[in-house]
Length: 258
Image (tube, rainbow, N blue to C red; front, side):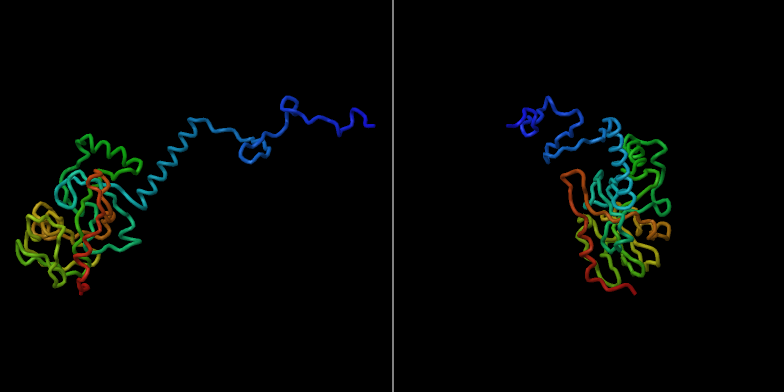
């Protein structure tokens, strides 16, 4: 006969009788494990999330992509006034620039007159704030957007106003330019020096580009080092969304520069 206090007849402890230090049951695994971690306060969790998000934004803006907006009609019909574009900063650098690319570059020398930050509009004020965290370009560093026409060594010619553009002896078919005007607003004959680029707006008769500055001042070249990057896509407004990669086709069969 077994004694009443035989452990074989002991009743398992219930929830009410379980020891105070019993491990908590994990609802996912069914195993017991007490966690010593304390949850981060909500305000601190929010602050850390914001700091990480801003850090990622700065890194992306610095090394990968940067947004810009279009302030003028010089690139119509490809880019409209107030279009927002994303620019890849991997070109030039990781990837080479090619003829037909749309590029954003810093003002090579008083191509833009005036200082937009001297009497800033609400738009410029917003850009100044966003530029502090890397979400917009610094409006004090003037940038322009044009199409890359000539690389170092290229011979670029417009025989006369109203004529077609020629590069390395080949006439270029340019479906991207304003169909109401011709490819050449002025006559010029240049060979692009080393380290330089020749750029032109798609709206040729409303663009103070390389051709215009060559005719006015005798120097229309842009330093390769001034290029911020290659425009990849129109991202706003949504109705204008489009990839910006069709310009290279016009130069696909072009002979190499001499």
